[in-house]
Image (cartoon, rainbow, N blue to C red; front, side):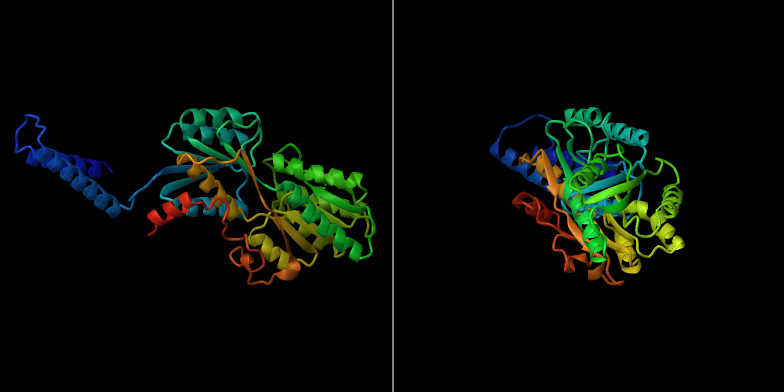
Length: 379
């Protein structure tokens, strides 16, 4: 880019000299003004040509996508949605993962404050630091969208979320219905895998379980909470194995996970114990979960929002803010229940739109302004 600016400056100087006839004295003649206007146009064309050559033509600025959660397929696809939509709208996009570490998350946000980002997409920043760091970003003129963030809201920021109550209800209803079809009666006994107090969505999903318990629909016989920063697989596998010994067949009907990322250890524990009657239901889809739904007979439902679409919508909202378009303070993306009976081994996140129209793409906030920008930067 330094070469680009040097080239542009040289062009300005050369064209100015030509327009003024080599004189250093200023003039105000119409012919000189016309020549200067022509020179400015030539510079713009030259800069555009040079930018096109180095791949940065028309770049609108930089977007930082900073996510607190541990790395997973879900994170990869969320990042992919942000990158694809950001680049389609003329931005360069940098992604950062704190891998579930709040200290690292704060450090990443602090570092981003020192750089020239026009937009932040913040995922799962927690109470205790979200408001402070996002407020500082907004004060610097950065447009911010927060996904599944904790803490108080900051004026001017849109906070998006999955419809977490629907995610919990869809996944729990599927488990209850299937258990009753197999002869169980309410309340259905389940083991819950969740880390309460970790992130807002997990608490919201657990609140639905409490509602169902009060209504007599189900009973949680145990809550398994893997240690933060520990060996999640071993924690879950050991705890589930212990519970399956404690609760013989008929005394517990299934396992529900607040996140499908917890399921590896659970599935292996069920298989090792030969407990084929156990049902599994969870939240959050990915390519891994699609294959698990196909291969594991006990896994009946994964309630979800397409993470790629979440990234897409978050970027659109932030870009609309840069254009001065009014955006909502909050927005919840609709959930769907992906069930094993609809899937084949050849299905992936890219093929789920055969069954669910909102997968892979969305019209949410695909406004005229967004469409015009996409057309402008189309390759």
